[in-house]
Image (cartoon, rainbow, N blue to C red; front, side, top):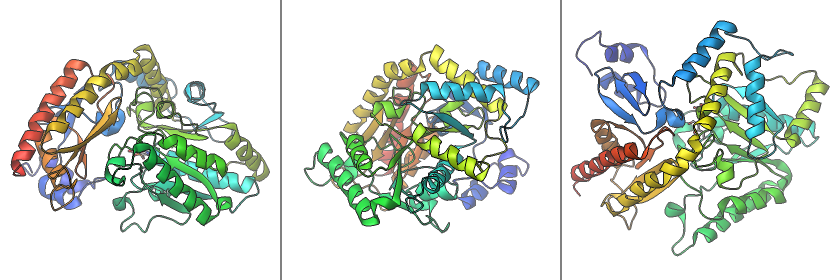
Length: 456
Ligand SMILES: Cc1ncc(COP(=O)(O)O)c(C=O)c1O
């Protein structure tokens, strides 16, 4: 922690309770305080430059300080800084964004509903699924199946769908009616000699067993990220989504694609659902939707979901759900401009062009003594750090090796994210090949330093 009692770090530690942080560590050490960003870089208050290799939180797709987004926000702020969309009201940016989302959706979608975060979007989905079940006269068909290691947010229902221990521990979660099936992490969980296809088939069979045990008439939906993000960048093994979808179809279970990270280009297609041939009934998007310049998220629903929901709202008199800032005009205007930038600058094309180099440089680290697995697709990837490659184990304390790497990343001017002993990268989609080399050269030094510190 900086010595001065009035340093920004000390003031932060006194007044600010941080999300996803050890509250005691902040008190002892103070945070890193960021001051500005440009392109793929950010600078902290000491003037140190970093490559933001996580695009913030998997989100700043068009890079930092994009003037067009600033201008879009300012113009909307001046024209109509706030309006809501409750009770038969609307405004231009919400209409334009809804139209755009419906038109670019990976499968035919009927409507967009606006929320402010990924968590709110997924929480909204849970309520929509319940509401629809009641509307259809099948009130018992409400359970939702999620996956171990899946990440869907932190509000009560979305945290329940999240399949990570620290989102449940001491929060008394998950709530009833949310179930978790096995993760698609082939490297970690496949049996000896099991092929990717066989592992996928086994996961699908386990899902079917769970549905049958619960009773198919009680299971309404299955939620999954096309590629798991916060669970450690887990790319589905071959045949995974085809096998899972076949089971869902058999029992008339809705598929919810959580595209909060994968959406809008990250995997080399506009949607992760396209990369993995998923046909969701419901899709949630956020983060790269506005490049996180403004908080906004959306739930897209198909006719199968919209029609009963509309009937039920007609029966009751209203769809009794919505947020004051849902579809906020400034956030929506920024998202519209952001989508235009993604299209005009062909950032999906850039992910396809630069992604192979990004993946190849990560892959090459498999030769490094502390890299056990490389995962990734498009411009998202991770390295799983181990000390024993055969046993797939790291240090005694889970996450300790990842923590050492994280410290060296900062020294080398790289912001990555360590999830346990996996180190994730998800740079802005504007990154070029030279910048990928700069990033990976730094990562190489980090791996060497981490290995040395771990005694390898
Ligand atoms: C796949 C996924 N879904 C949902 C969320 C929750 O989004 P938010 O943090 O905006 O609530 C996240 C956040 O990282 C995410 O990665």
